[in-house]
Every structure is written in structure tokens, then in C-alpha cells.
Length: 309
Length: 309
Image (cartoon, rainbow over all chains, first blue to last red; front, side, top):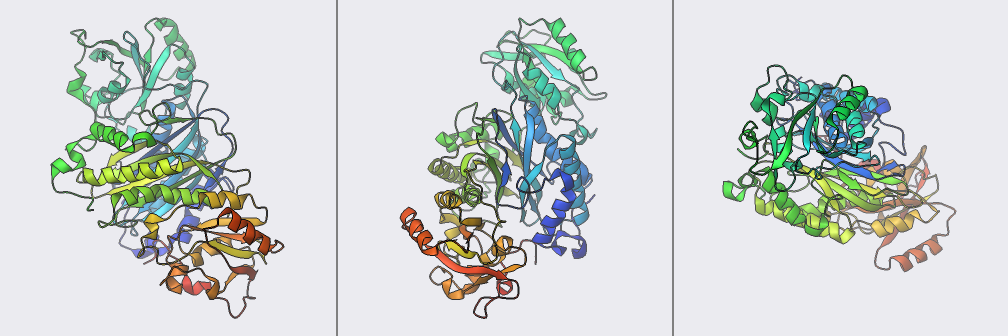
């Protein structure tokens, strides 16, 4: 659906700010709780956080993360799910979200309603109240940043912590995310992330958003490199190796399992917990320079890097 | 300083994402703590929040909140201070911030360095660690959204709570904020906000960001209206009444004091606590339709409303 309209009566300019904010609250519905926890004050008021907390922020931007063909409900859902995926990567669960919307006065009300309804649906599904935000006008713009506060589990899995010899696993399948619409339809791996954080043998984790080849770099211990077997990579049907390694927007979890762990028992425990979610052992962290001949040269499949032309 | 450059070597495109993020961490310096609390993972990890928490988000956008003439350090400072002002309005103190940056590949490194150094200086001054963020490229854009997590004091002052008869006060001076550069140089009223929240006779509060006439509307109890005496309005030297009431970006606090309170004792306590900060009693909430003849018709001075053309 095209986000912009030439008809003033169908655009956000027809409402003005106060009426627009009232419309947003209506569109969010039960996804936005009543005050004091919800929209309508200078800040949202939240209950105390008992354990450690997590905080992340990610945007969706017209022309970058979605285009005029995208379903606005999918764009709103993606905004929240991108952030939920970051939370999943550390084993956390969501607490509350705030959204800063930037838009041109010609943005269509129908588009915006779809966007917030999609956000609300996803917020209800994952139990994340949308407690506040901001609306600002800017010429030619249509973008939203969502900040997500989360609660950490008893153990926080970080990107650092893997050791040489650790096995590398990835959830789900990789590649062709944009062509297949996976970047809109994915389910953030919250339950899986929380479960993995409770396994002492899992040492480090992150989500695959910029492409496995690039993201793995951040997980690799000093003096090591990731040795990945092409045949072990769980590719989406029809996805090329280059897409599976470099396209990104997979929103799967990649993690390191201690070399000393019982891989068979781990795989069985996974299948009991998540019988329908594929888990693939794709390689291991080896000493730099000691990569087996059969392993991929990941540098050839560098993931998406912003700002490079 | 112009934010964009035609010279690739002087632009963010010369760095690429990884080097840019490394540069941002360098520019933030001690304002960004080391992991696990800082930049570099999927989420920032924060300590438990003992009491109630506050969460807010506000952007700065090129063409809306700043232009090519602005000092980038002032823009970075303003991004944080806008959010601090929201926190001040509820009597809270800051805990941590995350920043989502959206920029064109032609944004100049010198500008961006100034922006982050200004943000870092302000973050250190107010004790707010910048613990994470995101960098995304988008054509023609330069904007940043900052989400601020705060700790509430024992009492949270909200916009609702004023009653008919309550006196209306405002801190500092109003008007001419843009011409005077006040929208960049202001100090968010954190200490004042926390103090006011501890006074039981203060019933409701907000910050003046969209213009007093509009903002007061949100503070007005049902069935009432704000009766303001023009002569009592603390105007910045040279500021017109229209600017003081409608321009906005004042970042002062406006609040309601219970009619039963001892106004003299309150004023003396204020002067002891904040001898250098002006406090003005500007009017009272009267029953709708019972506004004294001498009081201003605020509807004539509607504050800045986004999206209206």
C-alpha cells in the first residue's frame, strides 16, 4: 500500500497532532494500557524491574526496511519483532515499548492505521504494552524507532563468551528472506532464546540480522575463526549459499555450544522443547589459520554492511 | 556546520558501518560504559530498577529541530536534554539512554563527531550512560531518536491531578526560544522537578515544550480552564506575548499548586532550594466560563501543533 497520498483529506494533515494521537491510541487499542502506564504523559510509568533489565532500539525506515508495496500491518509488526529478536538473542522477555514516529504530512491515514494495527496485533501476541511515544513531522520522511525494555532471565547470553573448539549452531533456515517475505513474517525466537540461556553449555549467542557471515564475526573468540561447512547450512528452499550467508534479515539465533557438551543429549533436549524448530550444527570455532580445507571462507560472503556503496 | 558533504572521504560512507560504530564509541568515550552495560551486544544490560521506572523517547530531525547552521554539539546535547526535560516533568532521574541514528551516506564525519561529542558531554553532565543504539542508512535523512529510561522518585507527578482553584506556576522565562538559542542551551529542570514532586501540595506537572497555551490545556482539570494574567507571565526580554504562549521549546516546568497551600511558605521554600531559578505564579484553574475578564483567552495563543499547515 502506498504510504503517501495527494489527497489532504486522506492524509495525516487532515487530523492535526492531537486528533492524530487520539487516532493512534484508538488503533493501538488494548495494546496500549491506560495511564499511568500508557500514552498520555511526559513519560510512561513502569513497575519496578526486579532482576537485570535489557534495553534495545531499532527502526523501520521507508526506502530502507520497507517500500510502497509493503503491507503496513507487516511493517508495524516488523518494527516490534526486530527488537524482540534482539531481546531473544540475550534470553530476555519483553516488558514495554515506546515508539517515535517521524512522518511527512502527506502520509495516508489508511497506511498509518494499518501500521499501528499491525504493531498492536504483534504487541498483544507477545505481551508487550506500547506505553508511549512521540510523533514528529519531517518532510519526505516515514520512519519509526521503537525502544524495547526487557527483563533478563537468570542468565544473560552475550555475544562474547565462545571459546576455540566450541560448536556453532543456528536455528531455523537462512537465506532469501526478502524475496520470501520472511523479514516480515518471521517469529522472533523468544522462547528458544530463553531456553538456550538456561543451558550452561551455551556460551554465547546473537541473532542473525546482517547475514550469518558478518554476524558470526562478532561471536568469534579472539585468535579464532568460524569454520562452517556449506552442506550443514540450513538453507531456505531455493536460497543460494551467498544469500544464506550474506543477505541477512533472517532473525534466527546463532550460538556457541561448549566443545565438552554432549551434543547428542543437547539435540534431544532441543527436540523435546521445540519439536518443530530446526536446529543445525553448522561448524565450530577453530584456531585462526587452522580452518579445515572443506570449510567456507566466510570473508567471501560478507553480510550486509550499511553505508558501503 | 553543514551536516552533509560532497567529499566521500569526509563522509560516513568513507568508513562503513563497523568503523563508524567504532568511531561513535570513541566519540562517546566515558559517556558509554564498557559491556555488559554498554554498546556492543544485541541489547544493553542494566541493573535491576528498584522503584517505579519511567520511559520516554524523543527525536531530533534535520529540517525540523535543527538546520545546517546549528552547532552539531548543540544538536547532540538537545537530543538528550529534550528527553531529560520529560523526565524532570515527572520528578524522575535518568538511568540510561539508547540512540537510533538514521543518516544519509553523505553526512559529514566532522558533523557526526560534533553531534556525539555534544551528546557525550551532556550525558556525563547529567550522569546518563549511553548504553546502546542503532545506525541505519536512509537517503536524504539525518535524524536520531533517543529513548531514556529513568527512575521515578517516591512520588510521580503526572499531567492529571490539578483541581479547580489550584494556582498555576511556571519556572524560568518563556518565549523567543529559537531566536535566542534557548532550545539548544536550556538546562532540563531535573533538580526542580524532583523537588516539586516531593511537595504534596503540587498536584500536577508537565514541561512546556509545545507552547504554554497548548501545554496548559493538558494540565487543566475537567470542567475548568486556565486563567492566566498576561502581566504575570515571565517573558524572556523582548519576547512577545504570542511567543511566550505559543512558540514552545521553553523546556520549563508548569505545575498546579493546591488552592489550600500556603503560597508564601511555598515561595520561600522554593527560593531556599533554587535561589537562582525564577518561579512565577501566573494564574489559576477556574470553572469553565468563569474566567476573569482580565485573564487571557488562551485559545487565541494556541501553541505549536504538528502536522497542521
